[in-house]
Image (tube, rainbow, N blue to C red; front, side, top):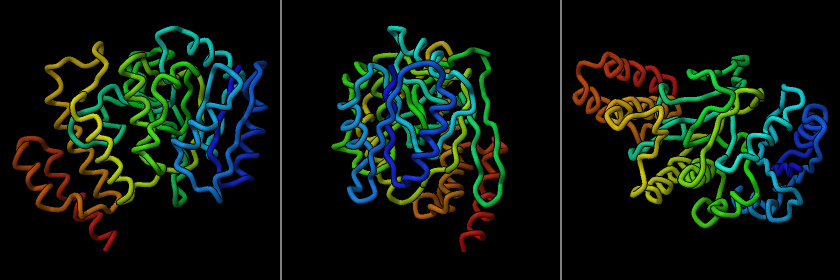
Length: 291
């Protein structure tokens, strides 16, 4: 009933994932398709499309090998929602708006819908991120992080992962979920809990693929959940999204894409917004840390 696809570079981690799924998924048929990518080093879009094409079940799951499921019998509730005709992709971390301006999947804090445990690097412990303001089992979103994505086989086949543009391991999830959101409704699942053991890679390569993503979607953005975002709110989301993206770039040390002139320009644009000026001090903090 559920074909689970994993692009692996660590056989031990893939084996741990297999055992975790076996003990938690519940009483539904499933297969785990592990693609050993250590030597092939193919892009994740190519791997996902290849493996999904070979899958024997009508429901697909694309999952990272550094994920584990904490909930019991989770397969039944996921498949029940996936079976609804209007359902697109189900994940665990998403956002209700994707702006035209350059942003990651998590455009701004007020638009986030989250339900997962993130393990922090450097001994930072683990944190349960849970944002579900409407108190629903499945919260509508437009973008989803790729740590774990469920989708019907026919929906995947309509859009596929764009292996022509996204040839490595970045931004494939934003692109795929935006493509599906243009036709169906994506959701963050609040009934199943997962843990994620890595924080992602925000490198120069990532930034380059983010630009490719926005070039592809330039004429179709912004996209947003109309029940949660009114057109009159987009200006505020744009301000928040720009600030969040600036913070992300300086926190990851990508100062060539966000320097002091950019921060001062933002402060001049929004001089009465307190967090504008806090960006200046954050910049100094991370400049010192990355010196």
